[in-house]
Structure formats: structure tokens, C-alpha cells
Length: 297
Image 1 (cartoon, one colour):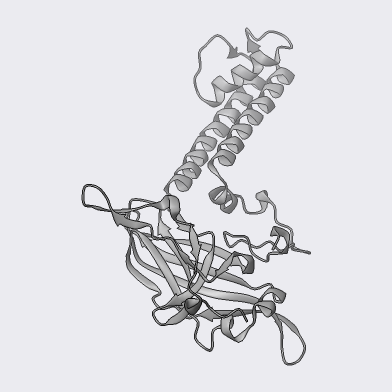
Image 2 (image 1 turned 30 degrees about the vertical axis):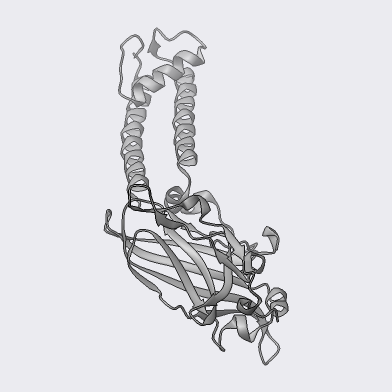
């Protein structure tokens, strides 16, 4: 299934095109700032800083009244603005007119407010707790504890512990109601274990294919026709920040491996300790024994 045909991205973000609703960075600046990558945030602050200094440099050239500022030199005006907004004050160029002093006063105030706001924004972004959760690229369907089950892996990539981690899994599928209306149905998938007391290593989440499971009540063709997607959400308490963190992942029907198992990634090390090989986290192998294979209906 192509990216364009998915309702949700792998990270759980909507791929739908919103008509009649306008969303821009500046309509919710603080929210956009917190969600933006660091490189984007630093680039935005740098562009704003340079833009403000260019604006004030043009104003100094327009009003004049700055001693030792070469006539028409934008570079001199720009660096004088940098010295003013950062309160450096080297003293080579100084305002000597009333208009220049008023402009310096305004720029100094803008600089103080800017430093305060930038400090708060950087601190909020730096202190925002984020989850580094690794989800398996695929899910598998295979026999498990005497029944068939849908399984996927999830792991904590940080060295900390996530306390009382809870996983919830649902299936989104397009269907038609009894009245003939199209609907994107949300079906909860029952899990064998939905809570991990201490989420520190790898966790294999298991959904038994009972008779009321949508993977049993629907054929594979129906699932594909309904553009079914499996959505998993993990919520837990980060023991370092003492704050709630969350992560989501979405698999479409092409990312389900029928009659396959995950490769074992845990084993003893030469020194006797147990290790986890995350380089094989996404690896699966097919089930060769016909007696163990899940039906292909």
C-alpha cells in the first residue's frame, strides 16, 4: 500500500488532506515549536535574529545619528545593531542623535524580550519528555500458546525505565453500515497482556485470534479492500522525568507477515550475562512446518 493511500503514517499521523481547514506554523506557534525538529527550531531562531538585525540596520541608515558609522554602509549598521540588541556595546559606534537614541532604546527592549522568550522556548523544548520507542517494521501471524495470534515487537531504546507502560491496539477499517453509509470503523484488539510493569527491554505484544477478532471475521481480501490499518499506542511514565510519554505506530496489510515468526534476539553473552541483539529486531523467518501454518482464507 503506497504512502498516499494510507490514512495514517507509520508514526500515527494523519495523511488525510484537510479541506476547509487551514493550518500554518504561525497559527499555533508554541505547539509548532515544540513539535518541530531541533534543526528547524534553531534555523527559525537564527533567521529571526538575523532578520531583526537587518530591519534595525535599515532603520539606522534611514535615521542616521550614529557616530563613526560610514555613510551608506549596511555592514556597519548591521553590526551596530548586533552590538545593541545583544547589549555588547564596544563603543566604536555610538548614537549621537535623539532619533538614533530612541531607536537604540527600542532595540534594547526588543533584545531583552527576545532573549527572555528564546530562553523560555529553548528550555521548554529541551525539557519536553520524548519517547524513544522502537516498533517492529512488521507484524506476524503465527501459532502462539495453542492458538493463532497477531504479534509485534516494541522496545525501549533509552537506558531508563518506563513504569506501567500500557499498550492499546485497534484496527481501522473502512466498512458500510446497515443503512448503507460509509464509515471508518475502529475495532479494539484484545491483548494477551496490555501492561508492562517495567518497560526496559523488548516486549512482544500478542493479540490472540479469537473468533471475534477482525482478523478472523474478515478475510484478507476484505481487509485489503477496507484498507485496514493496525494502530498501536504506548503510554507510560518516564522514571527520569516523572512525566507521561507516549508513542504510536501503524501497520497496513502489506506489513503483516502471515505464517512467520520473529527471530529470537535474546541470548547469553560470553561473560554469562544476557544480551539483546537489536540489529535483528525486525527480522522474521517463515514457518516451514505445515501443521503450524495459519489458514490462508
